[in-house]
Each structure stands twice: as C-alpha cells, then as structure tokens.
Length: 211
View 1 (cartoon, rainbow, N blue to C red):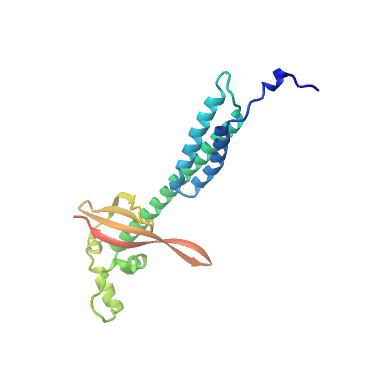
View 2: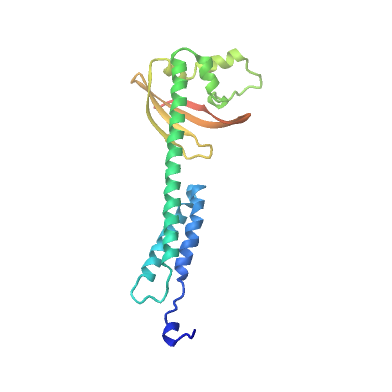
C-alpha cells in the first residue's frame, strides 16, 4: 500500500493538554483522602475543558477528545465522591457530638453524676495545684460543683447548635439551652479505644456556662 501526500497531511498529534487532563483526572483520587487535595479535580476538570475546546475547533491541529473526556469524567467522579464523603462524615460526627452532649446533660439532670463522669475526660476538672492525691469522693464533689454541672441539673436541655472547632482532635462545640434560661458550652471529642477492634468513643472534655 502506497501512502499518498494527502494521507500524510491527515495525521494529527494527540494534544498534550488532553493527556495531562487524563493524568490529572486519575490523580483526582487523592481528593478522597484529604480535603486539602480537592483542588486536584478542579484543575483536572479545567484542563479537560480547555483540551476539549482546543481539539474541537474546526481545523484543529491536534486530537485528543477521548482522553480529555475521560479526564473530565474522572475529575467529576472523584470530586463529587470526595465532597459527598466529607458531607456524610461531617453529618455523622455532628450526630455523635450532639448525642454525647445530650447523654451527658440528661445523666446530670437525672442525678446520675457517676454516669456523667464516665462520659467525661479528666480534663473537664480544673487541675489541682497541690501535691496531694485527690480521693475519689473529693473528685466526685469537684465534678458536682462545676457550674455547668449545677446548671445541667436545673432542667431539660435543648441543643441550640453544634459546630466543629477545626482542631486536630476533631473536637465539636455543642451549645445547649437548659430550661430556656442558661446556655452551656460543651466540647465533645472522639477517642479511639482498641478492644478487639477499634471503637470510637466520644467524651466531654470541657463544659462551661456561656456568658
């Protein structure tokens, strides 16, 4: 078979931008690991759109529609999944933080202070300044004397808001209204305990009256 001069002019190279869009689309999977990588699907999508515009022009010198479309599909797919996963995780964490605060306050209102203490982290009590060890009874008395605990015993609690603090320990601030009179600010933090398998347990690390 002889290749004529007209056949040689039909050859068009693949657009480097289309190839880059395909590669970036594959790299968009890192967005599933951390929100800090959400920019990767955005860049991949932008590169794919530019590549599609470039190869779709009449008389375009390059081809690459398929890799550009594949890169766009990967960018959209991974990007959408990353946002959905983050939204679901945030909803689950909020639910657990609110449930922890509500359980803590309900135990206090019902007079079950030992149960409330079991949900609390040691940091909820102010640090002792003396060298002597504190007895269990003294620790229980200090817990009962906390302003937030005394307020929690005044009536039913209603959660007013809950928001993440953006800290490394994934802490949430839950604001609860006690009998419509006092607002208590509760910090709830997830802890991972290994008992045969990893179990996430939420604890109250701080509680105070909102002034």
